[in-house]
Length: 321
Image (cartoon, rainbow, N blue to C red; front, side):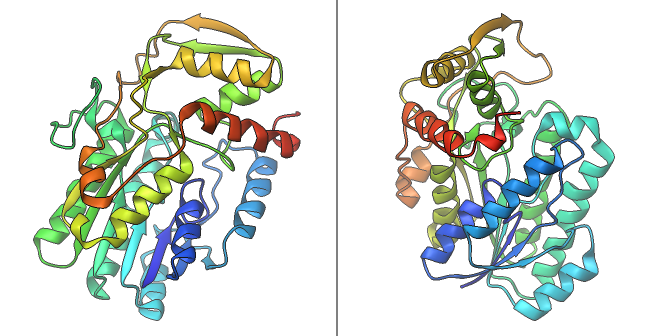
């Protein structure tokens, strides 16, 4: 298939592209390589350089807010499938610049949906977030009603509804993916696991905001494989999937910080109150993805953290600063 992957040079996106390439698909990566006004340019340039080396697909430096450029690409490529990962990455970043985030997450999405409609794309895969649920406990299924808290989760849920509405009008099939707490190699430092690991490697203090907060930590290659399965299997059409590790052993933020300290052999722990800007979360149910897609996450949290640590050891420029 011809596949457009938006955000295809991103942390998750370039892993999705790699798997698709290995399966023989013809991929076209759309990525404007933004730093979202917070990633240090030296860090981003290093990551982009090495992510680019890990894929073979043609890369288009396009801002998805530019409808004319998106239309030109779709007219030229005539894709069968779109996998849409390009987005402002999380709640903290959206809250700091909600107007621009809205342009990317709303206008950019509309541009892609309109181009997909006009150029007869067969299927549109929208990568959403577990944040659409709002507060939730463990084993939450895709049938749970959504009550997002904060602009990021609200915009992600709005995106889901837009995709569903284009399908309702008969333009293309769709699948929606809800990942959670993704971590792994070639990520920026500003996510929770990367923060914990770099701080531990530097011998710093890991500040845990809410010791008992449970997150469904998921290794990036497992997330990427789940997205590819949902994108390429017709049984996934018209459905929503939680794509996470969903480990039988629940991991709290405190557990994750202690594991990073144990593996790195340095660092100290500081416990603070829960950050009330974020909803309470737990482990998601992946039963539907397992049954429909054969989704089978392979990497345990402890193994994933060890792989992440080994990668950092091979790339000291990212933490020795």
